[in-house]
Image (cartoon, rainbow, N blue to C red; front, side):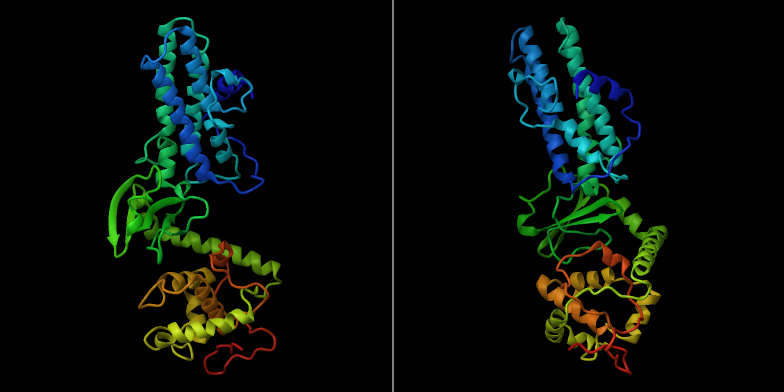
Length: 406
């Protein structure tokens, strides 16, 4: 891209909604946000360095403005000149922001990133203008404007939306969740830490092991409240109150249920309307029977009809599941995050996956060739629990409606 055309023309329409193409591959938006912040801070560092009087002469000032601009737009810019100083990033802050915005649809952090891009473009134009100034007074005015715009790019970690900037997006939205980190519903606390609680795109909290809370604090997190829970520390963000309201809002629950029903209808239509997808292997379900006998049978009974705890399979359980619009994701979340009741989270991921396979098999779901995974799957929120026909060749027990696991 050419600096002058990119900066001046695009800046005129910076707040317009851009047309975005679908991304070809998964993008680590969190890493791009961190990198963009680093580039913006490097740009500010160059400006502050020269304004503190650490260089002398008109040429030194112009080189400083070029270095600042290089850090903002990156080495891929057509006007990049190595002699001005390598910003250390090929694509620069604007490149990272463009990658985050170059996706189909919008996210909770989209307004903040669009605002950050507009201000980054304005700062780049300030710096571009500064490189052509002949009077020191004009040069310094340009740099002052650039600093003001860059401060808005960084934003405030305590604020969400367009004025939150990159910091606000990292601190209050799911952009703050690193790629590969455990993300759970922010409407409840996780069974294990570390974990990030997310509600409707808002980052409600970060839960960390108490031993690592001081050293493992996420970058640019705005902490509104700290709660110590046993061996864990829960850091609530500035968005926690809004997230809690979303959890309580009836429309939030109704909308989630509506999306589940629509997605379920599409899945069943593709499957011919009656076929249930296999979610586990028979070998895994058999292994899960042993886990159930060791960790679950005391509360839920040998026949899975409940004793100290509720029924977890058969006619009564599936009828209740249908009435309450439960899905496979609800079953998985309950088991993984809250069971065993006396020691939640005490099983290994493999043991949880195996016992879930056993429960699904006991509820007459068909086995297949792919094991039930140790991590959640988005499609599980669209697979309903409820009465259905048993797989071919399997006869449910007449009294309970459970299917034998062989």
